[in-house]
Length: 245
Image (tube, rainbow, N blue to C red; front, side, top):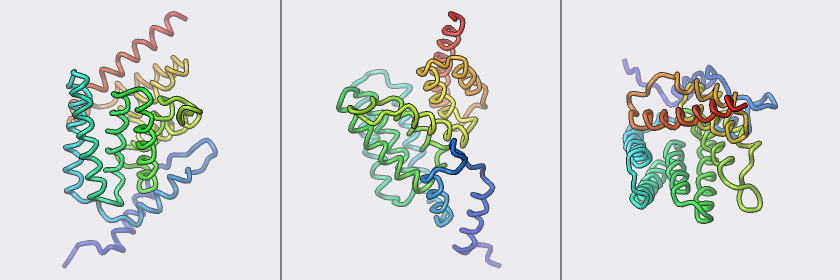
């Protein structure tokens, strides 16, 4: 007997899986329009190609190496530029999938951070557009990277008239990302960083401490170790602020 699922059965199974997942609920008490659209789109999407996942795993490893191991600034800019191009090629090769768009956005965001200045703002805007597109495909892909990354962009870039920075949107997206992935290192780190920047040192310390307590990620050792170093450093600063009163 052929046990391969028909497309209709596969969509039904996926729909049941989506229905069992806890939804990220904004303050209004309803799924955000982007997430609602993404859920409907996900139900109609076939399985993710294994070749795409293999290629993206390579992108992730290279991104981690550049971000946490390469110390020369110019070398980091050059390597991240090449990686952003590679991620963009994957997004073109696998249209209709959120993951390549997310990694293209993450590499562009990292490149913006490396370059700084006004030139970085166009990269940040491009990253935002890619994340919004990815969110309409699968809002929960890559451990809730869409809302977490959008949130980090909204609080890191300047506000109007220079750019699109918005602390209210940042908080909403970061809280959605944490709701999707409560034990995610990035979700806890970026929300903790946002809270620290807002002066909420006690809540920041709680979120960051939780991030350190989550299990290690053995299949992403460079990223895991590097992010934990950043979390420890920020947690120490938050604790110092609290101790100073």
